[in-house]
Amino acid sequence: MTVQTRSWSFALGDWPLNSGQVLRNATLTGLITGQLNKAADNLVVIPCYYGGTAQGSVPLLGAAGGVDSLLGSGDYCVVLFDLFGNGQATSPSNAHPDQRGDHFPLVTIADNVAAQQQVIRHWYGEPTVALATGWSMGGMQSCQWAVSAGDQVKRLLPVCGTYRCWPHNEVFLQGLRYALRADPLLYDSQAEAVPVEGLKAFARVYAGWAYSQAFYRKALYRELGFADRAALLDYWERDHLAQHAHDLLAMLATWEAAAGHDPGSLIQVSAETVVMPSRTDLYFTVDDACLEARHMPRAQIRVLESEYGHAAGAPGRESASTAHWLTAMNRLLKSGD
Image (cartoon, rainbow, N blue to C red; front, side, top):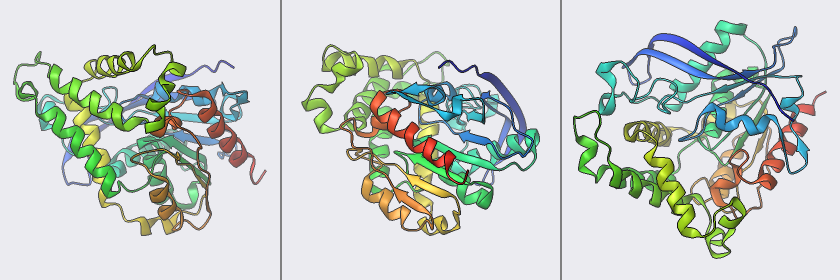
């Protein structure tokens, strides 16, 4: 199934942030497919994950493991969002000159979602969100949608992501930050300076957390097309060398700021909810996801039984896990029909 998407860019102007600062000349970007129906109740929102772009969630519009996505049927208006800091939307690498590099302000999960909601209001008014879903930081943002938009969001499906950045998750992020900040080139005022060793260290640390112990023990990276572990780690290094160091740090700060989220806020979530953690996720754990689900009046836990760790939920990364996500999504969208 091939689904056509259209790119979009929305100028927000000087966007006020929860910190009291302003993101200057802010622009949010993303992709869209389908049309809002006359009842304005077929909208699906998919926020972006860490280090990715809206394009990275496009596999959710197609098929995986023999499961066709209802999102590709043409019955839904699907808006995929980029994330402030990801190099597409306003980020340290492309911001107003006064806010580039380490001058970029803290942009929280709530700031991102508020901007997404502003785009939707401008285009459509106050439509019903049939589903908010996303992986990792995308899942965190989808939870924020359900908290801040209340009964406007009818269904919620966070995958390998929690509303709060829980303590162990926060320590993991600090390890990534310190690895990158150990490279003195990060602080070089020359625009062309690239902290190569810091980015490589960042990638190597991240690769150890992204997959499970069983993934490495059983050499499951071969199923992803890598001949050996060295090839996988080389890919991680090359992928991160292609990203802007301060963009990575800005998104990291957004993620980490969710440590201040109160799980009690989830009592406000009226959406029919499926929380989908991975059994072997090392930082968005099943236990943390279950703690949050207890606060949601209409939530159920559906665990991804996978040895791919956190990467189990990545859209299109491993077809079996994506198929489980599509199945859960399809069942949710059909509920109440």
